[in-house]
Amino acid sequence: MSEHVRNYRSLQERCKKIELLILDVDGVMTEGRVTYSGETEVKSFHVRDGSGIRLWQMAGKKVSLISGRNSPATQLRASELGIFPIIQGASDKRPAFRSILSELQLKADQVATIGDDLPDLPLILSSGVGVAVADACEELRCSADYVTTKPGGQGAIRELIEWLLRAQNGWEPLVSGFSVPALEA
Ligand SMILES: [Mg+2]
Image (cartoon, rainbow, N blue to C red; front, side, top):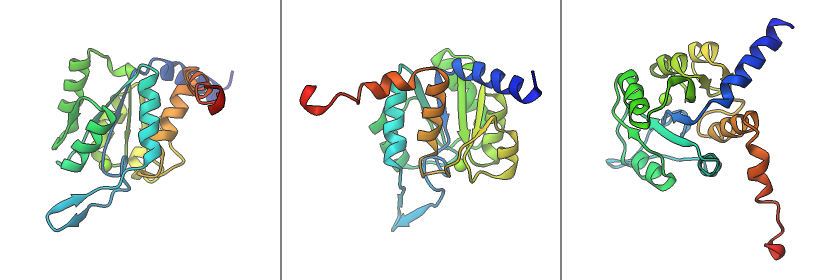
């Protein structure tokens, strides 16, 4: 068996263990721009990332987020999507990561973390599956198990969720629930 195939199989096995997705916010849930309207911060989130998170939760999985910054818009979006726990203002994300694992009683190999910049690197290296968005910094892309084809804020989270659920044989059952014509439902 080639090294490539062996690594691929090992990654498939690691994907099957994932129960929790930890998201970075700026540059992952958003495109990474910080926009102000007066003193209010305005963020744009991708709706299909949101529906992907719903699908992930329908599969019985959890979603959490760790942000280096503090933003009411992040709190609002997290509440809307049932993302919990959320930790904002984490200048060092490592203690936040340990705190979430402890709160949810999960091990690092049950976590997939997605990020875009250097503060996410320790988490990418510690997670069962570490993921970088397509436009992440080079160090993150080189260290990740998977680099999404979509950039942050443009469906990268949805792509990751679909990829993980396919690896767990959980995608098709969810999709089949949407395949019943409206007049037969
Ligand atoms: Mg970021």
